[in-house]
Amino acid sequence: MEWSDGAIEAWLAMRRGASDDASIMMGTILLRLALDTVPGRSALGSALRDNRVWPNSSSMLNGQVDLRSGIGLTLFGFQYRVEEMAIRDGARRVGERHIAASLADMGDNAFAQFGLQPKKLAEAVTLLELGQAFEPSEIVGRWHGLIDTSIAIEYQDLHNIDWLLETGATAATIWISPVLLDELDDMKFHSRDDRVKRRARVFTRWVQPLLAKAVTPSGAPLRSGVALRAWAPSLELSAPDSRHLEAAFALLDRQVPVRLVTGDSGQRLRALAHGIEVFDLNENWLLHRDEPIRTNP
Image (tube, rainbow, N blue to C red; front, side, top):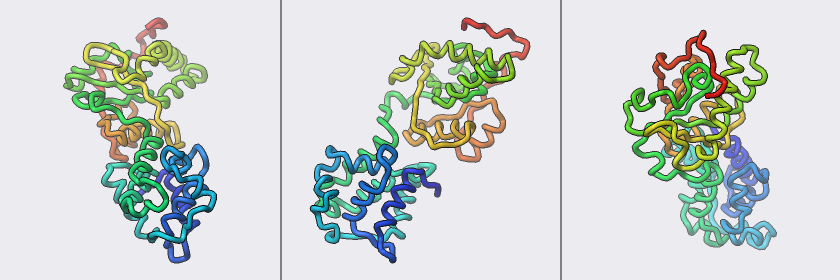
C-alpha cells in the first residue's frame, strides 16, 4: 500500500531508532518522532512537540526520562498493523494518522510513564493531517461533485447547470479546489487558445466574489438546493492532472462521498483506475465552439 511522504518520514525516523532486529522501545519511538522529523512538515512531530498534546515533552526531549524502560515493539509487524489501519479507514494511502492510531491501539499503559495520552495524540495528528472534520449536516443527504478544469472551460456556467435534474438529488454541493483555480489562473495568462483564455478569465472573475461565502459550511448558493464549496486541502506534490485526483481523495478521506465531474476522457480513466467515482455531465451543457463567451457573467 502506498504511504504518504509524512508517513514515510515518520517511519524512517522510527527505523533509525530501532535495533538490528527492528525492535524499538516506546520511549525511543516518541523521541525519534519528535526530534527526527522536519518541523512544519510532519503531523506526528508537530503534535509531539506541542505541550497541549504532550505536557511532558520537554523533560523527555531533555533526556530526563529513561527511554529504556517500558514496553517495545517490532517494527516489522507494526508496519502491517499500520497498513491494516489505513485499509479499515478506507484511505488510499497510509497517513501519519494511521501510525498514530496504531500506536494508540497499544493502550494507555504503554504511554503512561511518559505522561502521554495516545488517543489525544491520534486526534491531534488527524486534525493536523486532514484539517477540521466536516459536520454531518454539511455532507449527509447531499450529492457531492468535484469539478475539474474541463468543466470550467468547456461547459456552461455552474449556476446555469441544473445539477438536481442531472443528479436526481434533492440537494447538491459542487466543490472547487485550488488545483482548479491555479490552472485557470495559468490559462487566462498563458493559454495559446484565445477562447480558452477568455473562458478562464470569465470563470475566475465570476467565482472570486463567491469564495468568501464558499469556504463557509453553508457554501455559496448557486441555485435552489445547490451550493458551491471552495476547499483548500494540503495535497501531495504531483502533476496537475493527478492533483485533481488528490483533491478528490482528500475529500474522500474526510468521509465526503464525492464524485469527480470531468469532461476529460484521460482524467476520467485516471480517476476510475484509482477507484474514484466519476460523474458524466450531460453534453447538452457543453458550450458550442462558436458560442460567444460573455465577459460579464
